[in-house]
Length: 255
Image 1 (cartoon, rainbow, N blue to C red):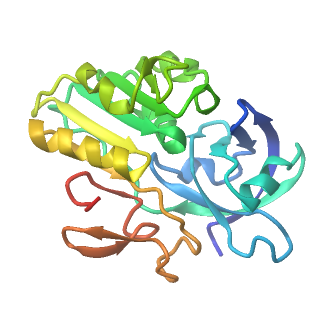
Image 2 (image 1 turned 30 degrees about the vertical axis):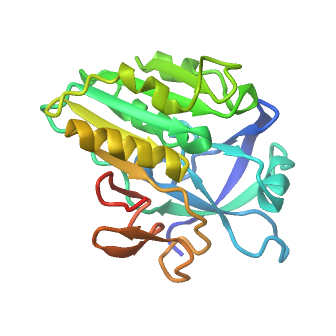
């Protein structure tokens, strides 16, 4: 397979009690990835887990970087991988974010939990392009938040909320919507995270006439639209998240 690579682990660090940061050598993959796309990683040489695991590409410059949460057996095995081990990777897969039109002045990225993952690569692409970059990030508590310094280096204005108020403002990420300049001509929204969160973003965008895109977080076993395990409902019928998405127009997905 032409988009299958063997990539060596350069680093695999625990950054909070819940979150990990994995860095892979770039190989030929890094130059091919566009913001919003994902890769499928073979976690084990054995039969458990049987399917590969999908990960949004956090960054793809001098290396391929992934940001993930340990949620089950697959990510638990991945978290134990050490520097120098090699991972079998397929990618890049799926659709990417489209870039803002020339009229857009404010780009708002809204992420919940590990849904922030695709926005580092997006901010890398949009940095120094004349946009006002805003990141609204919501997490459950301090264990689900991390240092946002790299986003800030890209010129992002960062605002954080947590359910318990342990970091930033207390509440869901929707409490930060007042940071958005709701200008229908000059504002573009990108969002990724839990469905309920993206539904609230969709409602806000519709109310103010804002255009946007969403990246859906479904379990994508095959990554190429064959198994149909990641189907999402849209206004144009059911579509596969892995092949037709994961990036869709914000007003297209039925949450």
